[in-house]
Every structure is written in C-alpha cells, then in structure tokens.
Length: 129
Image (tube, rainbow, N blue to C red):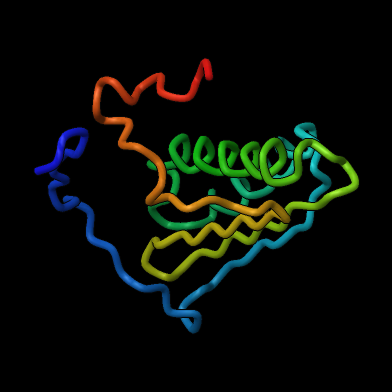
C-alpha cells in the first residue's frame, strides 16, 4: 500500500436505498445563510422526529449531524452571506430510516482530493498554511 494510505475496512452498518413511496413525513425549508436560523429549523426537525419510531434513541446524533451540515452550508457554501440561501429536506421512512438533504450554492469539493485524517501527519495538514 502506498505511503500515507490506510486500508479501510468495510462498515458494520447496513446501507440501503430510500424508497420515495415509503417516506411518511417530510419537512422542507429554505433558510437564510445565517447561523441564527440553524437552531430554529433544527428544533422543528427534532419535533418531527419525536413522532418517528426509533428516532428518539438517535436524537442527539441526528441533531448534531444536522446542525453541522447546516453550519457547513452557511459558513462554507454561502460564505455567511445572509443574502444566500440553504435548502434542507428531512424525510422519514416507514421502519425508521431518516433522509437528510442539505444544499447550498457553494462550489463544493472533490472528497477524493482530501488526505485521510486517519493518518497522523494529515491531522493538522493545511491548518496553518
């Protein structure tokens, strides 16, 4: 294996495609690229998820992931410009699946160009350059 590369073991999680016909609850919003708008939308999503079987046990994880995705969209995708917008849709699937989609007007990046954060010398790479 080349230097700087690590072997990735398969995930223990089971991934499956979402079936649009089984999405029972949905909440969509377009929010201003303002960090203050994140809590309002996240709180609404968490209320929706309280009604979803099985979501309560993962509530903290879901809320943290949603907040981080929205903050990333506001700060990086919209460059904190309140004139720009972030789109978010949360849908619940019968049986406990949750689908979260966050879109912003940013240019994005190629995830394959990012060095592995699991390799020691890459942890702070690019932080101070």
